Image (cartoon, rainbow, N blue to C red; front, side):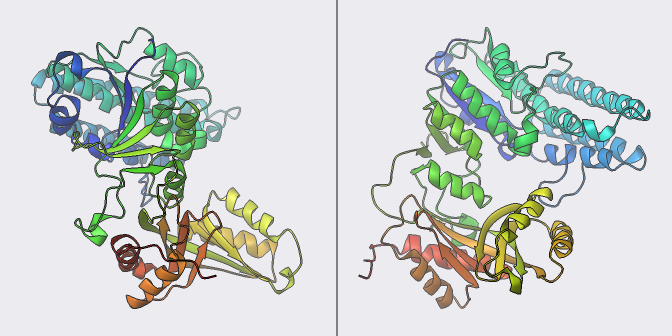
Length: 477
């Protein structure tokens, strides 16, 4: 395809489960003929499907991948794959109304599911010989399984739009039965060859099979990487992420729908802070791709297509302000060692252990004899970390504690006394901050709390720092 005046737009899994509603708003709405086109859509799997294929993103409940990797027998992963097939069929029955389309979708699911099943059976048989190790192929298995979800949703969406009279075209990047071992760029450009987004509507899978292996680095953030790379390579006018909600100053369920404010505009620095707090507007690596290609990013509400949403770019704020108050559950890993004073290397060794156990660090604090890492991990994972650290430092006291972190984020917090006012707001709400910190760049302030106090603390902080922020507090000389 040739680069042109088109947009590349991504739809998340939860929104995809309502794709029949999006057909009448986002995809078509008031548009007619040529106005329908000039848009390339990258779609995620229907809500819950990837959880069934891999593992539940939040609870960790095993899906096909987890069952297969820990299989004592074949029954578990076969049954898990059957559940995926059933869930896929239920998902497309919800959005397709024409019997012919439903049947085509059924056939598609059977072909992909049974193809994957046969692949896993053959791999198990091969690895029954001593020369082959199943562990060496697990990443490829994870890639194969994850691609099933996006291929299914893209196929169903294409059927739905074609039935509505749209010239929709499936662009399958999942590499199904493809012998080519190509780079991500080659995969995208080859699939888009001959595609004219100004005359048709490409529906692209969020997963792309490539030699680099997207899941090796990005795991389940791969769809945003595909989306950003597609936008950059095709010279998109704008990259748009459609969510179920506007990018707002807080969760409306916590602070009230009348209290939140749509951001309207922010920058990539804020987006990075949100990603660190688990409130991901876009994957940091995907944002970097768009920035380098000079493609603006917009985050919109998928079900309010007339609203421009929030533009994310590199522009500084017009004036200091807290833009978002959010938070997440964390675990505080504390290593106390009396002999740590003046000795180098403790922190590096702790980081090595956390990295080995794939534990994500959110923040950290330290003093003369204690290093505390605030991490996003399960207590089960932390028990393994503690065991390794106790072996490494037998005289140290190593402990983990469940806590929460609330954070006030903005492009520019200079002169707002956010740390002081935030602590006061938390105290006035009847809670106590266990810790608090603010970096010199003045883009976020973090408050450490008991886990059960997180939600009311966010509400209190939002009330004081966003709703009640009518003036800039002067810095004390």
